[in-house]
Length: 84
Image 1 (spheres, rainbow, N blue to C red):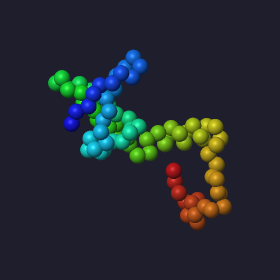
Image 2 (cartoon, helix red, strand yellow):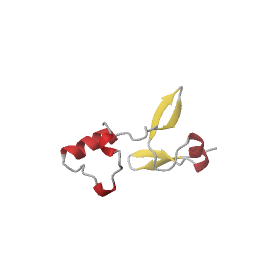
Image 3 (cartoon, rainbow, N blue to C red):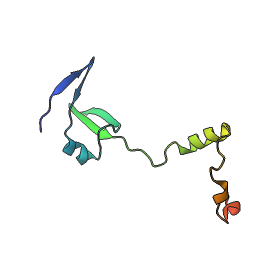
Image 4 (spheres, rainbow, N blue to C red):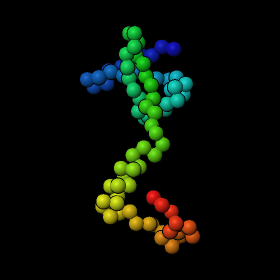
């Protein structure tokens, strides 16, 4: 499948057909890693870990005092026995 390199400001880009994106498990707007291997441009989707950044965000919320329960009256009976 052929495409063309197009001028985008001071850079350049290519249009990647949707079937090729689907084959690598990516979609428009996803972050990708670019590399050159043996004279070829390689495009790989950036694999994100589920819940990445949650620990840092929860610490930031706690430091700001914004970590209270939204619905404290809906707690589970065993919540006071949980160890975090």
